[in-house]
Image 1 (cartoon, rainbow over the protein chains, first blue to last red):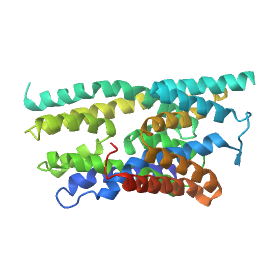
Image 2: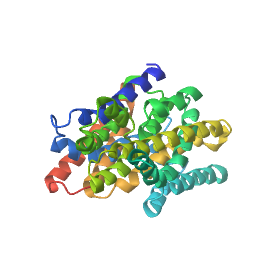
Image 3: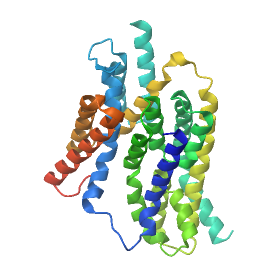
Image 4: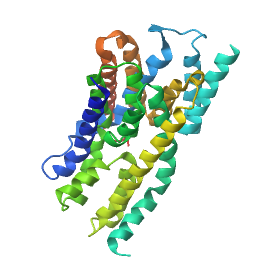
Length: 104
Length: 233
């Protein structure tokens, strides 16, 4: 699928969700289970993207110290935990990866 | 100044601290989208066509991994489901507006616009020109997002390949995910989705991502339901 079509469909779906209950006001309520499930969308989707990025190198699991992205990623997790700051986390992770690649 | 203009600028002012926070992310998005292989025009247009920060970062990442378009669209849908909650939450306040206003305000209903607007409505209720506040908050964010994207695309062309800029995407996701790991169901949802993503990595069409996300969401929801009703947010 062409990227423009992806953006068009993705945009229409996003607009549709933003418009949905404003449009359907009084005729439809968000079910309780869905309301609850929505809390788990960010941790689930983001982790599903992060894990392969950190653990897989060229499609196979790499748990050795040669996997710099895993080490830098774990450092970023710690920085995120303590700083609660997105920009500091990104910068710390980039510096960690840079130093690992440069010195090891 | 009449009520409409006053409310519009009050919306812009309320949004202002969020604009400062959003600006660097628009720039990072622009630079990373380019780095992920999107053309300059596609990277810029995504900021107005999709106009949703996290979904745009994720789309850039998936484009970089050559994910099939349908899977990207599905992922955008799952990631942006939360907007239905915002829509439900603001619906009573805009119920009496004509459809063209509802359409415009819905397009502008981002996380950041919602945050400022819902606080205003909860304090003031649905006033005569309250929707101008919503418009001020939403439009100022939209404008900031377009400008910061453009600046990021401009700077992105100047960043050398050897900087491993692509790693900034997973780092952005780490920075987003860690703060939401506030309780056991959320942590288990994240870990199970991550592990399933590794196991299901070789599934065709990158479907592993969708499967992993659904497993994580189901497990989190189940654990929360077993523990006690409600109680997270």
